[in-house]
Length: 265
Image 1 (tube, one colour):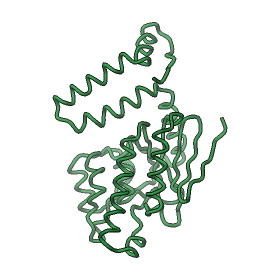
Image 2: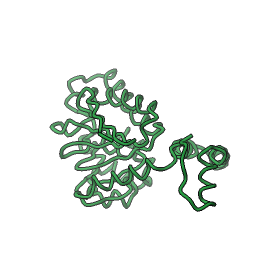
Image 3: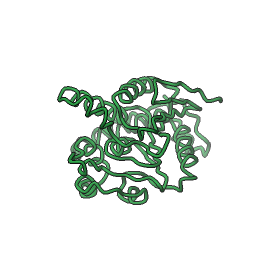
Image 4: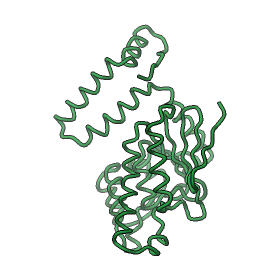
């Protein structure tokens, strides 16, 4: 199947191929900052993807030396003011929450730098693979700015003391350290990054899409609940899964020792 490029208002490019949708941050000269224009484009694109049943997996990638260096501070300084800052950060929060709420699993493919809100973007994705030359930091503190909004995603992804170490020191960590603390799933040699992400995306695209979508929503929901409510919620989700077409097919295929044929419903 040939790839279909949908060039959105730059600096974001969407490419769809065989059920995998790649969103490429494409402003390398500005280190792929999350400008107001990027946030607006991402919000619209995520809404489109959420309604697109042909998309099974989403990959967020970037061109250049940086995955994403966070907010565009020059743009923020040029528009300095409470209303502008509040609107910008609200859009950023909506974008990050949109990734979490997206029905499809989202993989961050990280090369180069992922700093401040760029680190937040990695933490907001469901899965993340990075090249070993990648570096991560919530380094706003070095400029007198505590990374309060990146802390929301980072603090929900890594253990509290690791999160606070990153947030309070602003020090950079390498990809192997990021994997060790759970910010990313694993690090690979830079030359293997494309192939590793492609393999993971293809593996996910061949799973039951019903189970993947139910599972992502179920996981996010129960993680926000007290233990007893989480078990009730997860049990209800598993019952729905067991009685679904794909749940029935999966159990039958396992018992009959054959490959399942998913209806994705």
